[in-house]
Length: 375
Image 1 (cartoon, rainbow, N blue to C red):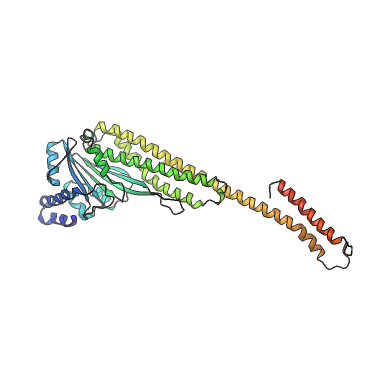
Image 2: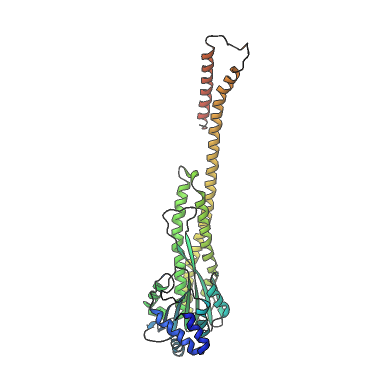
């Protein structure tokens, strides 16, 4: 039965009973491949549902309601629920169980949000824009360089809910890394939030390094011997892709600063020091993007200047050859007039003399243009 069908049972069978059925389905589907890049192969938005106590994953048969009640009573654990592109029907029961704010729920389902951090009572709602570099054999004027997605994170005193949009940015490897470090995971949901922020920002740095390789290649092509013939569309395409990367990276600065500096109830002060490290990495990515934008502007201006110089060179060559052609055209034009009395018209050496005069005039002009770099 689909998640939507189970959530409809919430209404008909009662809130707790229906939510237990939803939680049971989430628990049974927690065995799907964490590294799967898209939706669960079981046809549900639920990717994983795990309970942690003292930083250790709790095994056994526990549905979502039981797990949540257990960690709240013990006050030494939390539940991590992961979803991928849930629908309104799939997310409604979960939102009711965890008492999530309707505005945050709407943003989570609809996606296409800017990076931000909002507080709803004891619950934090964070939005991260994920990015990945799109591999390509050759950069063209239509190449996709940067692909973006989103990760929404709800952090409460005893739970973490992650909702991922897009076909990249899987949190499976991140979950495994955290589980391999129980001491860090024991610090609670805030440790998961930090790990996600750090993971996202590290991806920013990886993408900027890959984009730099594309920019270096374009720069090399522009300043090559035939740089004026380089396709300017590639430069514009890189600027467009860089703009998309900027929209993902730059707005995240303020949320990270809030997490690193302002006291938040669900964020342990010890974790805030880790957020300051994330802020430093984010600043580096932001500075790189700004530098790339300025560099692309300079490359574009240099390319336009090269095109202008090449056009001037072509015009000078055309002008020089036109001047060379003008000499014989003028002389032959004069002698082409059918007058009876023309200079040296009946002289036997008149024709060779005219040819010699044309050749000498053209040679003098050619040497002059050659000396001045016009030819």
